Image 1 (cartoon, rainbow, N blue to C red):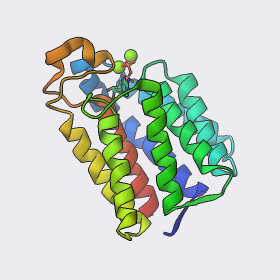
Image 2 (image 1 turned 90 degrees about the horizontal axis):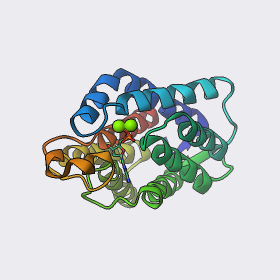
Image 3 (image 1 turned 90 degrees about the vertical axis):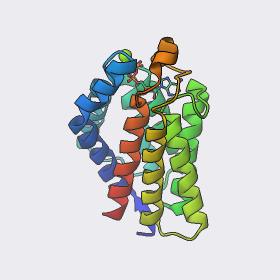
Image 4 (image 1 turned 45 degrees about the vertical axis):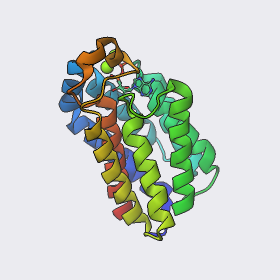
Length: 211
Ligand code: ADP
Ligand code: MG
Ligand code: MG
């Protein structure tokens, strides 16, 4: 695949919805250790609202599609993850623009803008034990793979692998952002729930792209 069209993006979004719904209990279990036990419910509720919105008709352009996803997440998820993922998709859409497909460079810059939106909103830095710790390595890996000349599906799979490694690396960290930071040292020894859902986000992207 040389470019990602709106149909592939819709596959990604529905794959992400299905995966967070399937892994809802695990995500909530992770959040019960260091948060308030609602991350699985938040993600499943938000993505199911997105699915309903898209079932009414798929927007014709990448920016409209991603804007719909972002706005729906912001309005349907009360927790921190709603505005953060919502901003991610909104910024991705703004950067992509009114196009019907993204080439590798376009996808990479849209994802980079999404990551920057999360940082603008939540001020997370590397090692704070948040979704940033899965997403930043994923976006870096995508850029590196594209610079290496990898095709889009290989690049997306490398990004997914980097997100999973970033998720795993949150386990020993002490949280410095979000609810988990209230626990201080006691937050160490658990995976960050948002990093876990971000690894799912990149895994489903790679799956949608490889078809
Ligand atoms: P809440 O904490 O409001 O209940 P969720 O449980 O749905 O919301 O989401 C928690 C996740 O949000 C955390 O695991 C973390 O990855 C992410 N998170 C929280 N605060 C921030 C932040 N300031 N920046 C980036 N990610 C954050
Ligand atoms: Mg929570
Ligand atoms: Mg909550």
